[in-house]
Image (tube, rainbow, N blue to C red; front, side):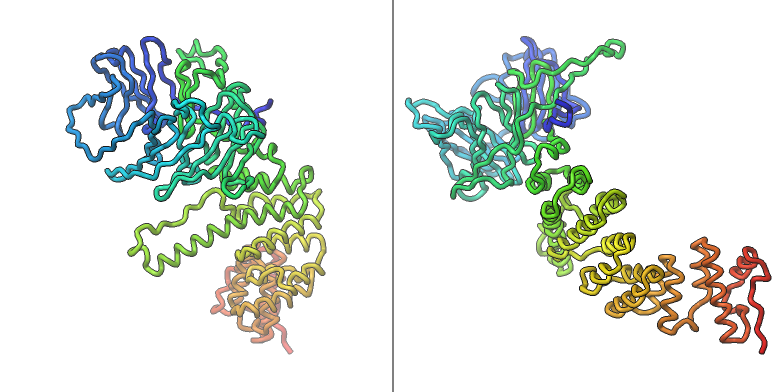
Length: 609
């Protein structure tokens, strides 16, 4: 398989630590995401490393027996060491205060640092779980819940192992994940992952079932809100997205893997040692090794090789593995780093070799604009609340985060549509249909269409002499009125004479001031169009010659400059009986330029009657 087939990879900058051996014990702290390498019970050194730690922490401590567990408090302020099942030692002398106690028979516990929730396994079978939530120094007891075991247990002994339970935050909600090795329904073979939603208030509820359709040894990670299930026997992994539509039976939603099972991308372990020695080739890493230990949300540790990796999702390969464009968009829009991949999908579906049908293109545009509109509405609500002074009364008022899923008109124009319209081999009917489809989608979501999209449509129509279609689009207001659009129409008059009147009608509908129209045209170097417009409304006797000559000179088109200069000479002759400019018009610089380019003899001579 080529690199483009793997959609999971290990990060390229792992945490490297001394591998586990009889002298060196390795521990992992899930709250701080730190690896502790403890040599000889700490007597010959403890080295602590985390994914974000530039400098590892090193220290020694007395060897007072085997270390069962070792952790720092948050921000590495207090070190705690456990050497027996009932004692925890704080190397610094500190006074501890009992805040709250609970009397519960516990089989095992699990803590989720992201959610600040501890889960206790209770009862003989171990399948009644009691959660507690920690917040601001207080501990709250949440309602307990029962995990449904695969079948009625034959013997009364511990049936639920902590190996089959994980806790993770998915789409901002805390879930308990239960790996059920056999389905409860007799007609279904293979294991499944059952997701219980654990809210801060209210009862825990079974929400989703992920169908694995296989048996064996599994491990779970959560990456970018996706549940990743690793299967050791086949050395492959699958991903599930609970936001994608599944099969709902009235109580729970059943999900199947989003994509075919694939291995994690092969990984090379660089050779350690001095530079001359490391010229030898890197060693392939044994993936899905029995020495791998998986931690939430996205951590894989190989104690035998001395590496800690973060698991990552690669989006680009998924584009070719998920042919349904609508489902692909639903999937990509939920991912963190999705923008450039989504834009590449849009370009791909408009390419000659991979062209999608118009209904599919419409579906993709609608999905993108649905997200875009959600963001615009949230931004509008925030601005309104801010103007109403609600930020003082509501400190929780936050500006909506602009995620990569917000693909706006400038993104589509720059990366997709402007490039697409430049393609020579593309059918112009298809090009116009695509542009109009995107504009239709924006209108459907009541998003104001930016003028540059209308300009793109007009330029494409003009390029292919489709003036009748342009006329219809304007007549039936398919293209919304705007000043830049009116100016573009004015500039088209030489190709299509009715464009002049269409433009003036649009400007009248916009109640635009005439001098403003002239300014816009001049700023776009449409000097002749500006002159035609001002003559059309009878204002050409009062305009500033210098303003027009400045604009004509800026175009660096000498013949245009000649035309404009001659026009004003003729106006001077008609109004004053002399073609020369008066000192008050400040045109000396332009007269000098005219003489330089065309010679003195080209100047108009006064006409005498």
